[in-house]
Amino acid sequence: MRRNKKGVSSKIEITGWKQYRLNLKELKEKILKEVLPLTDNLLSLKIALMECVREVERMLRERRK
Image 1 (cartoon, rainbow, N blue to C red):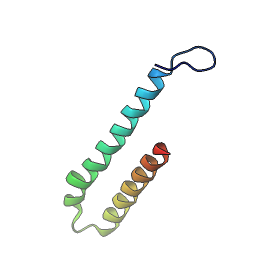
Image 2: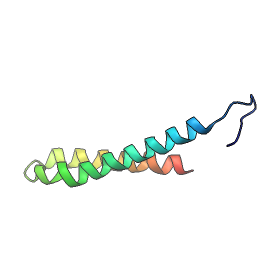
Image 3: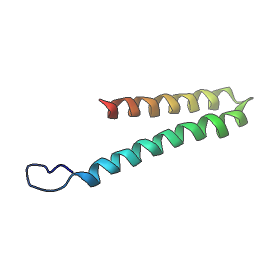
């Protein structure tokens, strides 16, 4: 466990980001597996959901850097 300049443990922040990242992955999977199949005839909704998926993927990429 590392300590920052003030001597405070940063473990909580790190695990918090891992949890955040996991939640984003779960959100992406739910959209792709559960919501998109219901939108076959609603093209505009389907496009909006795919934009959400791309936004989630972008957020995941940013956190990896």
